[in-house]
Amino acid sequence: MSEPIPAVALESVDAVLGVGMYARPPAADAGDALLTIGVFARRSRLSMKALRLYDRQGLLTPAHVDPSSGYRRYRESQLATARLIAMLRRLDMPLTRVAEIVSAPAQGGAELLAAYWEAVERRIASQRELTAHLRIRLLGEERGYDMFEVLEREVPEQLVLTSQRHVPVDELATWISTWMSRMMRTTPAHGGVTGPPFVVYHGEVNHDSDGPVEICVPVAHEGTGAAVRREPAHREAYVRLRKAQVEYPQILSAFDAVGQWLVSRSLSAAGSPREVYFASFAKAAPSDEVCDVAFPVAAPSA
Image (cartoon, rainbow, N blue to C red; front, side):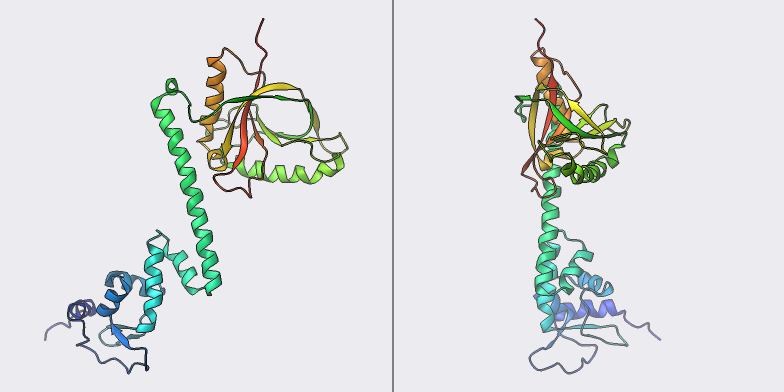
Protein backbone atom coordinates (compact mmCIF):
# COMPACT_ATOMS: atom_id res chain seq x y z
CA MET A 1 0.00 0.00 0.00
CA SER A 2 1.52 3.35 -1.05
CA GLU A 3 1.82 6.25 1.38
CA PRO A 4 -0.61 9.17 0.91
CA ILE A 5 0.70 12.26 -0.82
CA PRO A 6 1.33 15.03 1.76
CA ALA A 7 -1.07 17.96 1.66
CA VAL A 8 1.85 20.36 1.02
CA ALA A 9 2.73 18.43 -2.11
CA LEU A 10 -0.87 18.56 -3.30
CA GLU A 11 -0.88 22.32 -2.84
CA SER A 12 2.36 22.65 -4.79
CA VAL A 13 0.89 20.73 -7.70
CA ASP A 14 -2.24 22.83 -7.61
CA ALA A 15 -0.14 25.99 -7.57
CA VAL A 16 1.42 24.97 -10.87
CA LEU A 17 -1.84 23.92 -12.50
CA GLY A 18 -3.95 26.69 -11.01
CA VAL A 19 -6.90 24.34 -10.48
CA GLY A 20 -8.16 22.17 -7.64
CA MET A 21 -7.71 18.50 -8.54
CA TYR A 22 -7.71 16.68 -5.23
CA ALA A 23 -10.70 17.94 -3.28
CA ARG A 24 -14.13 19.22 -4.09
CA PRO A 25 -14.69 22.60 -2.38
CA PRO A 26 -18.00 23.63 -0.97
CA ALA A 27 -20.14 25.80 -3.20
CA ALA A 28 -18.94 29.38 -3.23
CA ASP A 29 -21.22 32.24 -2.28
CA ALA A 30 -22.46 34.21 -5.24
CA GLY A 31 -19.92 36.88 -6.15
CA ASP A 32 -17.33 35.56 -3.67
CA ALA A 33 -15.69 32.61 -5.36
CA LEU A 34 -13.38 30.14 -3.67
CA LEU A 35 -9.83 30.31 -5.05
CA THR A 36 -7.15 27.65 -5.01
CA ILE A 37 -4.12 28.49 -2.91
CA GLY A 38 -2.02 28.85 -6.06
CA VAL A 39 -4.38 31.38 -7.63
CA PHE A 40 -4.81 33.19 -4.32
CA ALA A 41 -1.04 33.38 -3.83
CA ARG A 42 -0.51 34.91 -7.27
CA ARG A 43 -3.35 37.41 -6.97
CA SER A 44 -2.44 38.44 -3.43
CA ARG A 45 1.31 38.65 -4.19
CA LEU A 46 2.01 36.41 -1.20
CA SER A 47 3.92 33.13 -1.40
CA MET A 48 2.28 29.88 -0.40
CA LYS A 49 4.86 29.59 2.37
CA ALA A 50 3.72 32.96 3.73
CA LEU A 51 0.06 31.95 3.46
CA ARG A 52 0.70 28.81 5.50
CA LEU A 53 2.53 30.87 8.13
CA TYR A 54 -0.29 33.40 8.35
CA ASP A 55 -2.77 30.53 8.67
CA ARG A 56 -0.85 29.00 11.59
CA GLN A 57 -0.75 32.36 13.36
CA GLY A 58 -4.43 33.06 12.75
CA LEU A 59 -3.63 36.14 10.70
CA LEU A 60 -5.21 34.98 7.43
CA THR A 61 -7.09 31.70 7.67
CA PRO A 62 -8.47 29.84 4.64
CA ALA A 63 -12.20 29.86 4.03
CA HIS A 64 -12.13 26.08 3.64
CA VAL A 65 -9.66 23.33 4.53
CA ASP A 66 -10.36 19.83 3.27
CA PRO A 67 -10.49 17.58 6.37
CA SER A 68 -8.83 14.63 4.64
CA SER A 69 -6.15 16.28 2.52
CA GLY A 70 -5.58 19.54 4.39
CA TYR A 71 -6.00 21.39 1.11
CA ARG A 72 -6.66 25.14 1.55
CA ARG A 73 -8.99 27.44 -0.36
CA TYR A 74 -9.60 31.15 0.11
CA ARG A 75 -12.48 33.48 -0.65
CA GLU A 76 -11.93 36.14 -3.29
CA SER A 77 -13.06 38.71 -0.70
CA GLN A 78 -9.95 37.81 1.38
CA LEU A 79 -7.67 39.27 -1.29
CA ALA A 80 -8.00 42.78 0.16
CA THR A 81 -6.77 41.58 3.55
CA ALA A 82 -3.98 39.57 1.96
CA ARG A 83 -2.76 42.56 -0.06
CA LEU A 84 -2.89 44.75 3.05
CA ILE A 85 -0.76 42.22 4.90
CA ALA A 86 1.71 42.12 2.00
CA MET A 87 2.10 45.91 2.02
CA LEU A 88 2.44 46.12 5.80
CA ARG A 89 5.17 43.49 5.73
CA ARG A 90 7.06 45.66 3.21
CA LEU A 91 7.38 48.16 6.07
CA ASP A 92 9.30 45.48 8.03
CA MET A 93 6.35 45.39 10.43
CA PRO A 94 6.32 42.46 12.89
CA LEU A 95 3.47 40.01 12.41
CA THR A 96 2.05 40.81 15.85
CA ARG A 97 1.63 44.46 14.83
CA VAL A 98 0.26 43.44 11.42
CA ALA A 99 -2.37 41.34 13.18
CA GLU A 100 -3.41 44.29 15.35
CA ILE A 101 -3.87 46.55 12.33
CA VAL A 102 -5.68 43.96 10.21
CA SER A 103 -8.13 43.15 13.01
CA ALA A 104 -8.81 46.78 13.96
CA PRO A 105 -11.58 48.99 12.51
CA ALA A 106 -10.44 51.26 9.68
CA GLN A 107 -9.82 54.32 11.88
CA GLY A 108 -8.12 52.27 14.55
CA GLY A 109 -5.92 50.53 12.02
CA ALA A 110 -4.86 53.86 10.52
CA GLU A 111 -3.94 55.16 13.99
CA LEU A 112 -1.94 52.02 14.78
CA LEU A 113 -0.10 52.36 11.47
CA ALA A 114 0.71 56.02 12.16
CA ALA A 115 2.00 55.17 15.65
CA TYR A 116 4.16 52.37 14.25
CA TRP A 117 5.71 54.59 11.60
CA GLU A 118 6.37 57.41 14.08
CA ALA A 119 8.31 54.91 16.20
CA VAL A 120 10.25 53.78 13.11
CA GLU A 121 11.16 57.37 12.26
CA ARG A 122 12.31 58.02 15.83
CA ARG A 123 14.47 54.91 15.72
CA ILE A 124 15.96 55.84 12.34
CA ALA A 125 16.66 59.40 13.48
CA SER A 126 18.37 58.09 16.61
CA GLN A 127 20.40 55.58 14.60
CA ARG A 128 21.43 58.34 12.17
CA GLU A 129 22.79 60.42 15.04
CA LEU A 130 24.47 57.37 16.58
CA THR A 131 26.17 56.70 13.24
CA ALA A 132 27.49 60.27 13.19
CA HIS A 133 28.76 59.84 16.75
CA LEU A 134 30.51 56.56 15.92
CA ARG A 135 32.02 58.06 12.77
CA ILE A 136 33.57 60.83 14.85
CA ARG A 137 34.95 58.26 17.27
CA LEU A 138 36.43 56.17 14.47
CA LEU A 139 38.02 59.17 12.75
CA GLY A 140 39.54 60.37 16.01
CA GLU A 141 39.11 63.60 17.93
CA GLU A 142 41.87 65.26 15.93
CA ARG A 143 39.44 65.39 12.99
CA GLY A 144 37.26 67.79 14.96
CA TYR A 145 33.55 68.07 15.63
CA ASP A 146 32.45 70.20 12.71
CA MET A 147 28.90 68.84 12.94
CA PHE A 148 28.41 71.07 16.03
CA GLU A 149 28.41 74.84 16.22
CA VAL A 150 29.71 75.98 19.61
CA LEU A 151 28.18 79.24 20.84
CA GLU A 152 28.63 81.35 23.98
CA ARG A 153 26.23 83.22 26.29
CA GLU A 154 25.99 84.91 29.67
CA VAL A 155 23.84 83.21 32.30
CA PRO A 156 22.61 85.30 35.28
CA GLU A 157 22.51 84.05 38.86
CA GLN A 158 19.53 81.77 39.45
CA LEU A 159 17.71 80.35 42.45
CA VAL A 160 16.98 76.70 41.67
CA LEU A 161 15.05 73.83 43.13
CA THR A 162 17.46 70.93 43.28
CA SER A 163 17.49 67.14 43.51
CA GLN A 164 20.70 65.13 43.31
CA ARG A 165 21.54 61.44 43.30
CA HIS A 166 23.80 58.75 41.88
CA VAL A 167 22.04 57.06 38.95
CA PRO A 168 23.12 54.29 36.51
CA VAL A 169 23.10 55.18 32.83
CA ASP A 170 20.25 52.78 32.02
CA GLU A 171 18.03 54.51 34.62
CA LEU A 172 19.08 58.08 33.82
CA ALA A 173 16.38 59.08 31.31
CA THR A 174 13.56 57.70 33.47
CA TRP A 175 14.91 59.36 36.61
CA ILE A 176 15.28 62.74 34.92
CA SER A 177 11.77 62.58 33.43
CA THR A 178 10.14 61.45 36.67
CA TRP A 179 11.85 63.88 39.00
CA MET A 180 11.66 66.82 36.60
CA SER A 181 7.88 66.35 36.48
CA ARG A 182 7.66 66.12 40.29
CA MET A 183 9.74 69.25 40.77
CA MET A 184 7.72 71.17 38.18
CA ARG A 185 4.56 70.45 40.17
CA THR A 186 6.06 72.18 43.22
CA THR A 187 7.14 75.35 41.42
CA PRO A 188 3.93 77.35 42.09
CA ALA A 189 4.85 77.37 45.79
CA HIS A 190 8.14 79.01 44.79
CA GLY A 191 6.75 81.74 42.57
CA GLY A 192 6.81 79.71 39.35
CA VAL A 193 9.49 78.73 36.86
CA THR A 194 11.85 81.52 35.82
CA GLY A 195 14.07 79.74 33.32
CA PRO A 196 14.71 76.48 31.49
CA PRO A 197 15.44 73.50 33.77
CA PHE A 198 18.86 71.90 33.51
CA VAL A 199 20.66 68.73 34.53
CA VAL A 200 24.19 69.01 35.95
CA TYR A 201 26.61 66.10 35.67
CA HIS A 202 28.94 66.32 38.66
CA GLY A 203 30.49 63.01 37.60
CA GLU A 204 30.55 60.78 34.53
CA VAL A 205 27.43 58.71 33.83
CA ASN A 206 28.22 55.65 31.74
CA HIS A 207 28.29 51.89 32.12
CA ASP A 208 31.02 52.19 34.78
CA SER A 209 30.07 55.40 36.62
CA ASP A 210 26.86 56.85 38.09
CA GLY A 211 27.42 60.56 38.56
CA PRO A 212 26.16 62.11 40.78
CA VAL A 213 23.56 63.94 38.70
CA GLU A 214 21.62 67.04 39.77
CA ILE A 215 18.31 68.29 38.39
CA CYS A 216 17.81 72.07 38.71
CA VAL A 217 14.62 74.07 38.11
CA PRO A 218 14.95 77.89 38.29
CA VAL A 219 12.26 79.50 40.48
CA ALA A 220 11.35 82.99 41.76
CA HIS A 221 11.81 82.52 45.51
CA GLU A 222 12.71 79.89 48.11
CA GLY A 223 9.31 78.94 49.48
CA THR A 224 9.23 75.92 51.80
CA GLY A 225 9.46 72.15 51.68
CA ALA A 226 12.04 71.76 48.91
CA ALA A 227 15.82 71.94 48.60
CA VAL A 228 17.06 75.09 46.89
CA ARG A 229 20.43 76.61 46.07
CA ARG A 230 21.85 79.52 44.13
CA GLU A 231 23.47 78.83 40.79
CA PRO A 232 26.13 81.54 40.31
CA ALA A 233 26.20 83.78 37.25
CA HIS A 234 28.61 82.55 34.61
CA ARG A 235 29.53 82.52 30.97
CA GLU A 236 28.99 79.24 29.17
CA ALA A 237 29.85 77.58 25.90
CA TYR A 238 27.15 75.36 24.43
CA VAL A 239 25.89 73.41 21.43
CA ARG A 240 22.22 73.02 20.51
CA LEU A 241 20.84 69.52 19.94
CA ARG A 242 17.86 67.99 18.21
CA LYS A 243 15.81 65.43 20.11
CA ALA A 244 17.35 62.55 18.17
CA GLN A 245 20.83 63.69 19.23
CA VAL A 246 20.04 63.48 22.95
CA GLU A 247 20.11 59.66 22.99
CA TYR A 248 22.99 57.96 24.78
CA PRO A 249 25.75 57.42 23.67
CA GLN A 250 25.60 59.85 20.71
CA ILE A 251 25.04 62.80 23.06
CA LEU A 252 28.60 62.23 24.27
CA SER A 253 29.81 63.70 20.98
CA ALA A 254 28.25 67.02 21.99
CA PHE A 255 30.03 67.02 25.36
CA ASP A 256 33.29 66.14 23.60
CA ALA A 257 32.74 68.91 21.03
CA VAL A 258 32.38 71.62 23.67
CA GLY A 259 35.34 70.24 25.62
CA GLN A 260 37.51 70.24 22.50
CA TRP A 261 36.36 73.78 21.68
CA LEU A 262 37.51 74.96 25.12
CA VAL A 263 40.91 73.30 24.73
CA SER A 264 41.39 74.76 21.25
CA ARG A 265 40.95 78.26 22.74
CA SER A 266 43.04 77.64 25.84
CA LEU A 267 39.96 77.94 28.03
CA SER A 268 38.85 75.77 30.93
CA ALA A 269 35.54 74.76 32.45
CA ALA A 270 34.44 76.65 35.55
CA GLY A 271 31.92 74.05 36.65
CA SER A 272 30.26 70.79 35.80
CA PRO A 273 28.77 70.27 32.33
CA ARG A 274 25.00 70.34 32.00
CA GLU A 275 22.05 69.75 29.69
CA VAL A 276 19.65 72.72 29.45
CA TYR A 277 16.12 71.76 28.36
CA PHE A 278 14.34 74.72 26.76
CA ALA A 279 11.53 72.77 25.01
CA SER A 280 9.13 69.98 25.89
CA PHE A 281 11.04 66.78 25.24
CA ALA A 282 7.91 64.59 25.26
CA LYS A 283 6.10 66.68 22.63
CA ALA A 284 9.09 67.26 20.35
CA ALA A 285 9.69 65.47 17.05
CA PRO A 286 13.10 63.83 16.48
CA SER A 287 14.21 66.78 14.33
CA ASP A 288 13.12 69.47 16.84
CA GLU A 289 15.72 71.35 18.88
CA VAL A 290 15.17 70.64 22.57
CA CYS A 291 18.39 70.81 24.53
CA ASP A 292 21.75 72.56 24.94
CA VAL A 293 24.88 70.81 26.15
CA ALA A 294 26.76 73.51 28.03
CA PHE A 295 30.00 74.05 30.00
CA PRO A 296 30.53 77.03 32.35
CA VAL A 297 33.64 78.81 31.08
CA ALA A 298 36.35 80.13 33.41
CA ALA A 299 37.49 83.68 32.79
CA PRO A 300 40.83 83.78 30.93
CA SER A 301 43.78 84.42 33.23
CA ALA A 302 45.39 87.80 32.89
